[in-house]
Image (tube, rainbow, N blue to C red; front, side):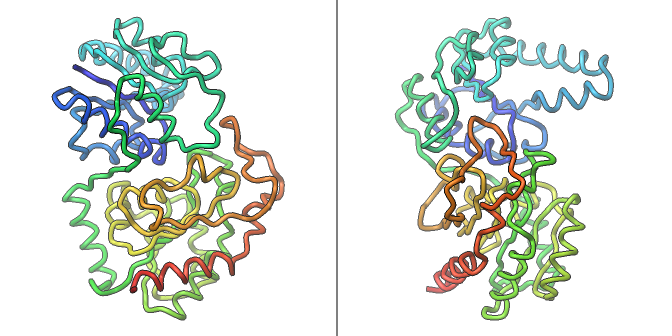
Length: 359
């Protein structure tokens, strides 16, 4: 059996699909399993022993090539089809919810094509579940429903992430370079995130001033070190954070890590505090304690997966949230679900979690 899994989305979505990988490997232990993802998310999968091969052919990747050159785009697209054709897949689990992938695989003669029929985009799927949106239950549970059509009964709601030895060594050396000892309690902080929302990313972010307040308080009361995570695009905001918090216990990691290195550093943290973001789900996959802040997105659908004892979710108690529905980003001038979230409420949950770490 030769199986292809398709998921062209971001960090969180890819990690939500790792139970699918595990379940298929359990159902078909001697099968060849490949995974098609976008290139940015590939480091989350390249060390997974349950995957035999990775492909990087997402719509987003192709769009970037097309903006550079239509000829390059056409060449890359034809090459991708030829590579997929050569694999002679028997079965595809398509999590993309778009028609293009199943159309190409139908043209290539893949006999079994499983996926979601969203907005009638599943016409080229042989087996499908009709969905209007993801609501009321977690994305992972929708994936479990889809796999029941394959007769999969060993589905477990556990995320998995395998770190490379190289990234783990890098993390150890990074911590040594910043004078962080083995006995130091590390707290990871990801006050940014939401990159998959593009220019609307700030609509998933609790105010940086509120994060700085929480950090000031926990550093004052507890002996710990803070790893501040972000991308190069977040560097200006990290300067604002440092100006407010102004603590030597805060180590700014923004823009200094690859995705694999980021995950390796998160694995060293006792607690991870974050917006609804990809790094949060990395922490969940690594079984870290988390405190996560959710605004427009429904935590029941896109929230942390894993041992519930490890994860605390904080939300504002207002009637209009969650407003991210039908896969549509909200248009809200105030974002009260984040702006009104009481920093004392968040601090209390973080404090309780820190105290629980030593109990």
